[in-house]
Length: 396
Image 1 (cartoon, one colour):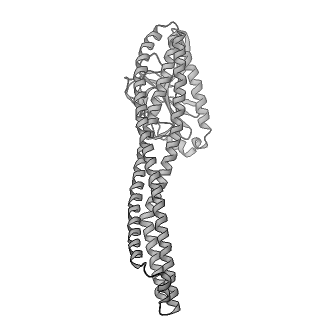
Image 2 (cartoon, rainbow, N blue to C red):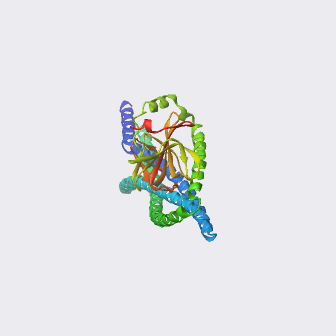
Image 3 (cartoon, helix red, strand yellow):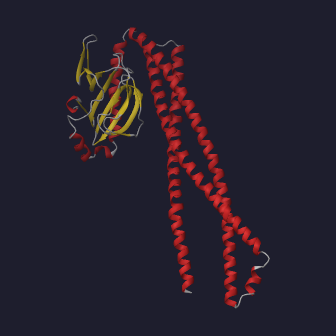
């Protein structure tokens, strides 16, 4: 009896070791696949939303062109499309990266299951050979030929265990076959998705080139249009109010008001990275426009730079908001915690997406002239809650 208990214990230990070495890594792999699948599904929805919005903007531009509306309106419409084209490309690239990771995990699973199937089939074949060789003697006869009743009962019990074991192998082989079939179909589906996304990415890149050329032509026409600069000033004031509204919404997040985070960011005063290399052409505060006899408040600083120059994150933070506004063009708002935000406007290529964490000095985008008639520059703001701060004393 003691010997039987020892063998049972040895078998249990062997099963546990097998699970730790072979099954647990596959379980972790499956968990990783599930997580990636959720991310891919979310991104797919985001892609569809941007594509729908882009289609609406394209229809609006066609209307403006057919009605021969003013050049400024058409210019803004083109800039909105450029922003959406760019965001779509970023989303597509992220989706491609996620799909590549998903496929890699799926291929690992498929290889494991294929190897396991081969192993189970080999065991079954060996069992079938063994059964064939002993099929001449029925289990009941073997039991009856035992020396005593107890030994006969043991033989019958062992035969029932073997039968159960054989059925289990057959069931596992059938399950693995179904799983492999599903994984192969999923693999092909994901590969087809990658091909479709790559094609869409190329199409959007082509649209960007076309729209940039259109924008260049419209910008020259808009600059000659009567009252264009005044209209741009009006749009800038309106955009500033919209930005304040966006910040208000972001401040509703309790984490944004963390006092410790506010203290840590305050310690960075005089140490923030310059967002772009260039010369300040408009400082923080009130600016008088003598031509139109108007006074506007600049909530940040405007840095003259060359087109396509990289724009850097002044400090680590989360991309809380990415969009386009008249007077600002394409812009990014970074949330640094404790109620502190930085804003980067007049952007061209944007390399991050909403919700992404970026480190200090990381490239966010490139310089453009969207939203302005003043040529390539970066508009940079620093805010503490609703309060607009002069960024210059904060920069190193």
